[in-house]
Length: 230
Image (cartoon, rainbow, N blue to C red; front, top):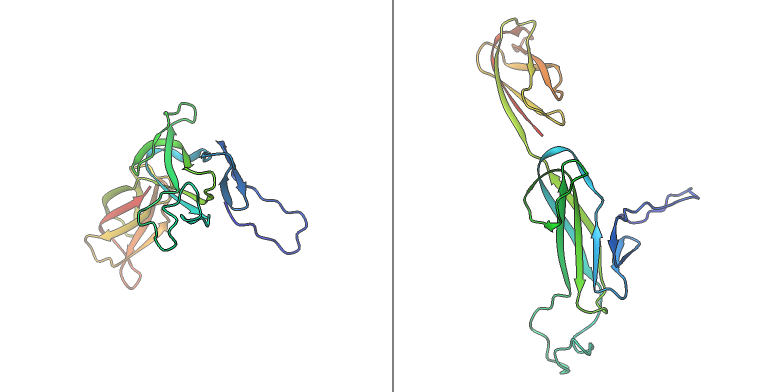
């Protein structure tokens, strides 16, 4: 949900809002609000695709606000008492908020809805349900931000080898599966080399490099490659 922005010189503008399945709410500008007769609202995100099956940590961050200006000595059913100086000293929870999640490996067979916890979920697809409840219809409660992040699992490996022909260098084939070009660090273990230069930049499957002395002469030697990605 984003704020509306006017674009100068445009005469045909529209807003695209993610408005998936749900009940008892409406969208007002950048906010989701309760229907006036609803004590609870249910908001479902669209189905999220991680791109592949893995163990991903699902992180949720929501901004919910209470905008009412009611006070305890002006609310007939909620006041502490009518004394003009005595104030309520406890806590009141004007809104309840829960999250549920369901997951799938193929977007066909889904798990049942379950309480979301900050943990790893084995899936490719997932969907989150937010439930907001209020005790009184006069409580004005809105939420303006629903951010979901997936922390994908790290993939690491170490590869050792020897450059036998200086002019040829080394060609590395990764043994693990990466879903984006990983970070590659080459350590020179033996020989007279000081500088590493990639002749083929890291891709999903491998890379190639040579080892040089400071004067630009290619040399031989042993190496270790540290690969980090996801």
